[in-house]
Image (cartoon, rainbow, N blue to C red; front, side, top):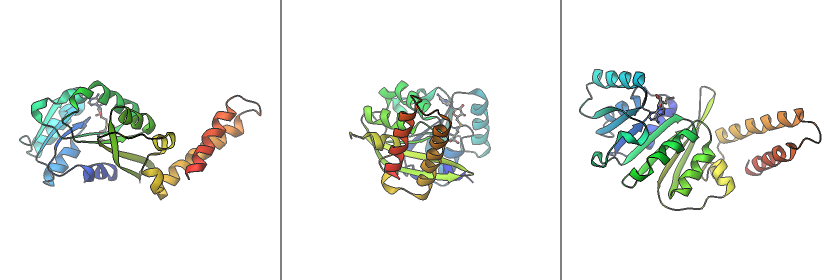
Length: 220
Ligand code: SAM
C-alpha cells in the first residue's frame, strides 16, 4: 500500500502513459501503477546506487522486469527519445532540486505530455520555472499526512502568466482554499508573528515580514 502522498501522485498519472519516475527510491510508485494495470511501462530512475539496487530487487521480486526498467541515472538522463516517455513524476524532493532536474533536461521534455511534481518546499520557485519554460499548471493538490503538508503540481505544455500570489500560493490551491491550505498558511503566519515578536521595534526586517504577513492574510 502506498503512502497517502504517493497514492495522490499515482492517482494523477494519466492511464496508459509511459512513465519516468525520477528518484524512484524503492520503485514503489511504478510497481503500484503497473500492478493496478494503470500503465504497462515505466522507467524508475535513481542517481544513488543504494536505492537503485533496492529498486532493482523490488522490481525483480514482483516479477515486473518486463514492465519496469530501473536505471542508474541523474534526473532526465534516465530516458531517451525512443523510450517515448509521456509522463514524468518527480516526487519527494525540494522544489529547487526539482527545478534543477527539469532545467538540466529541458531539451528532452518536448515529447512529454504531463509532469507530476511533488515538491517538499520552495513550490514558488518550481511554479516560476514552469511558467518561464512554457508549462501551464493544470491541477494542484494539497494534503496532510502524518503531520506534514505536501503539495502536488501537475503541468502540461502551454503558456500562462501567473501573478505573484499565484506563484507563491498556487493558482488552484489559492482559489480552492481547502482546510489543509488554510492550516499551512496559518502556520506560516504564526511563524512570522513569532519573528516579529523577537525583532526590535525599528529593525529593518520588520517591513518585509509585515508585508509577507499581509500577503498571506490577503489570500486566507
Ligand atoms: N520519489 C520517491 C517518493 O516520493 O517517495 C522517493 C523520494 S526520496 C526522498 C528522493 C530520491 O530521489 C532519493 O532516492 C534520491 O536518491 C533520489 N534523487 C535525488 N536527486 C536525484 C536525481 N538528480 N536524479 C535521480 N534521482 C535523484
